[in-house]
Amino acid sequence: MLIADKGYDADSIREAVEARNGQPVIPMRKNRKARKTVDMAVYTLRNLVERCFNRLKNSRRIATRYDKTAESFLGFIDIACIRLWCRRLST
Image 1: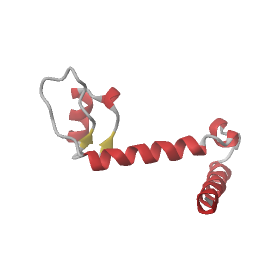
Image 2 (image 1 turned 90 degrees about the vertical axis):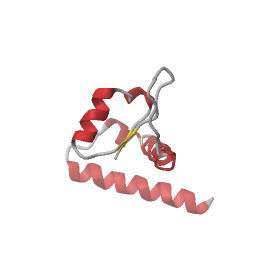
Image 3 (image 1 turned 90 degrees about the horizontal axis):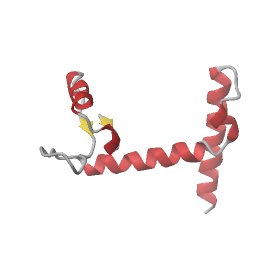
């Protein structure tokens, strides 16, 4: 599945996803004449993922990618996720 916002509502993108046996979950723009249904239950999960990335990017070290190796970068992402998880548990 490709979950995207209305900005990616183009026939070429939809055809490319379908050519790879994928399912595009992209809401239609208002000016579209041919409407297709969108699984809104799946689309709402996109919001949760975007919020998670935004919270992770509050850490300056992640947003600017200070670490030189992928291993240390992913290690700090783990630390940031644990910090977010602990904050959620404390509230």
